[in-house]
Image 1: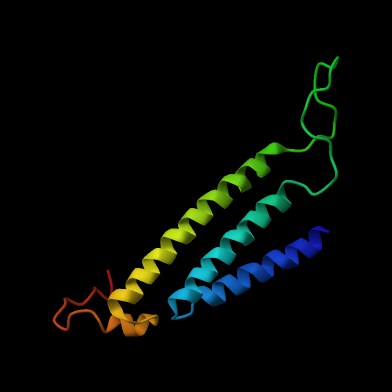
Image 2: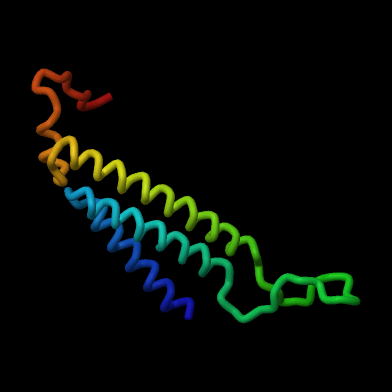
Length: 125
């Protein structure tokens, strides 16, 4: 099962990098969303995939029974899902607003909206 998930994670990262290198804003946003899902799946896979009991101490016991599920990756993924959704909605609104102002979805066309006499960025440091 871990091999199948490793291949799926690799495909998520490949597709997300391909979309992030695109010139269209909506493709970049989808690439960010897919990258976040790939990272969440990577954390989930690193937290073990075996069937284990929940980390709850039964009545009459002093400690946990081995093996128990690790709750830390689950909490990290839940937090990452919320933060990723908030980031995606913020970037979606930002991209929509840029589209309204510049009437373009292509980053090269957006670059033409810069002033002609603007100072050039440094080419080296």
